[in-house]
Structures are given as structure tokens and as C-alpha cells.
Length: 110
Length: 117
Image (cartoon, rainbow over all chains, first blue to last red; front, top):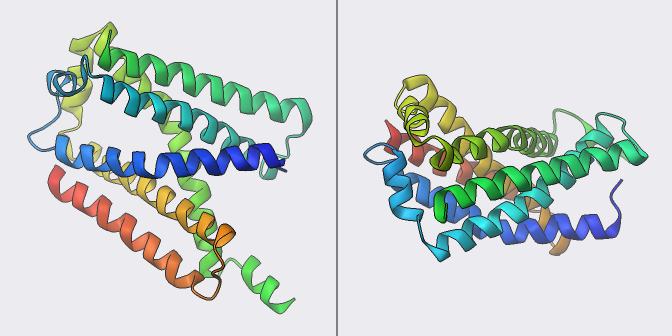
């Protein structure tokens, strides 16, 4: 139930995220040592253009990837079609993007 | 025909790879809004964020974190496996790839768990 454009977008965002996921996993394993705190997280990310770009790219990619993935599941398991199916995709994508962008901003430049 | 029937069987390892990829993806999509909402507290309510982060020291929460790390890793390696199958001229090594993907995910999740406890 995916057209070519959605199919390609799903794969391109996946390829983009593969190294970002590895980076995120490595950061988590490193950061969890000694416990997590707001100060520890912000000390690493605040004012950092690199972390902003890393997580900003991650959020854009995951919003697109998650929305298309949820669309597929809503179609195959939920039986949704047409406008309802596209509605689910857009709500998921825009929701993930807005919440994610807010979180990235909160830990970098807010 | 028989091969196709084999692949749709739930006893087939590739069905397990498919369902693991789908369920991990859905779980991540459900978890992400919560993850983003808690992180945004750095801006809106830092004390509350610290409260949430202290929760991560509880045993049960650590177990849930281990699960999330596993889901993320298994979804990534499962996806890489899927793209390799779609785009690269491989086919006989499907089972090996699927098993390797699960093993690598488990390794990363276990490493995280060992660091966390």
C-alpha cells in the first residue's frame, strides 16, 4: 500500500538514521555511567550546534519514517484506506516533528 | 508455492524477523512522544526533569530502558537487514543475516544493561 515516493522516503530516512541510531546508542551507554541528571545532559548539549544538527536531523528523519511506518501498519492491520489513512500518517508525522523539535530546542538553545 | 507458504508460516524464522521489526517499530512510535515530552522539561520544568531522571535508577525502570534499547537496536538492524535483502543480490544468507541482526541488537542492549546496573 505504499507508493514509490513513500517507499523511497522510508528507505532514505532509514539509511540516514542508521548511523544516528548507533551514535545515540553509544551516547546512551556513555551517558548512563554515573547516573543521569538534567545538568549532565544539558552540560553536553547546551549551545552545541553539532548536537543540534545531530538530533535535529534525527527528529526530521524519525518523524517521516515513523509516519510512513504507522501508515503501513494502519493499512495492513487496521484496514484504513484513503483520507483516513493519510490523516493518520500526517498526524503521526507532524506530532512527532513538533514534539521532537521542541525537545531538541529545549536541550540545545532554549 | 511451497516456499511461499513456508515464508508465511508463523513458525518460520523470517516471520519472527518481520513481527519483531513491526512490533519494535510500533513500540518506538508510541515511546517517542513521551521521550520528547520529558526532554522538553529541560526548558519548561528542569526540577521535574530531574525527578524523571531519578526514576531511571529504579530497577524496574532500568529493565524498561533495557527493553527500549533492545527495541531500538533490533529495529535498526532489522531494517538494515531488510534493505540489504531488497537492494543487494543476496538471498541464501537470509537466516544468517536475521540471526546476526538479533545477536548484534542483543549485544548492544546487554552492554547498556551492564553499564546501567
